[in-house]
Image (cartoon, rainbow, N blue to C red; front, top):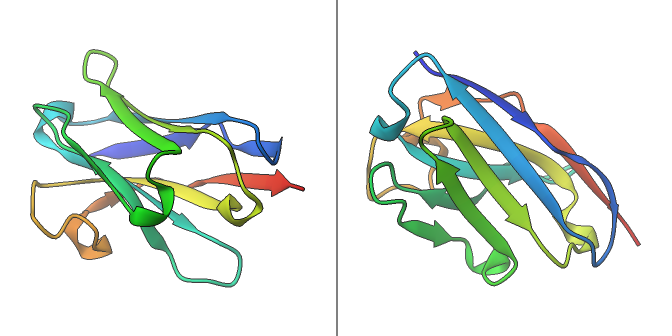
Amino acid sequence: QVQLVESGGGLVQAGGSLRLSCAASGATFTMYAMGWFRQPPGKEREFVGRVSGRFSATVYAESVKGRFTISRDNAKNTLYLQIDNLRFEDTAVYYCAAGAPTTYYDREGAYGYWGRGTQVTVSS
């Protein structure tokens, strides 16, 4: 069992930056690939990016490449999402998720554990 708790969301002006955190507990953190997803208002949840467990290899959705950076601190059992140059369309609830390594990392079904999400609202 893995428990995940996101934090760091809030109201930010367009062009600003934000760093989200996801604290993990209950299992060996390095065993899991960690993903970030987001759900904009009125839309389905979508893949943002993912970082592997042991070597911290990252992959991102095309829509966020260059502005989003995922990292993990295995000593602190914490996952991060740095968002720069925020845009209005980044407004969403952001979720972290943990799962076994897989090539289907952009699919929700690849992750067995989810946090409750943190709201990010970007004002124009």
